[in-house]
Image 1: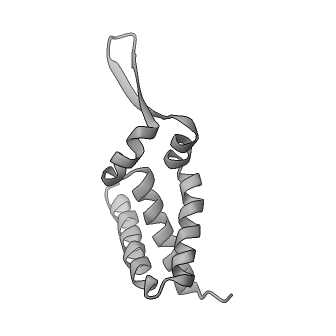
Image 2 (image 1 turned 135 degrees about the horizontal axis):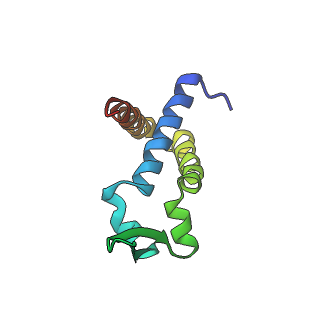
Length: 108
């Protein structure tokens, strides 16, 4: 299989964006919610702290960027190799992925 550098960059950025979408973005919170639990503690000053912890294997898998990244890369590669005109979806995800990186850099 011969994948050129440009196509490889498209796959990398598309995979990055899809991974971020699953692990962090608000739009997929509904899918993560059943597999995460809210943990609440009080600090010494009486302030309540809350965070999310994964529950079970699925919770671990969908909250771990490294785990989701592998599956995302596999999915993006499958789309690239099998789906007719899948390059269009990959290009859109790649542009959105690069845009999100640029946005994060510009906010610092």
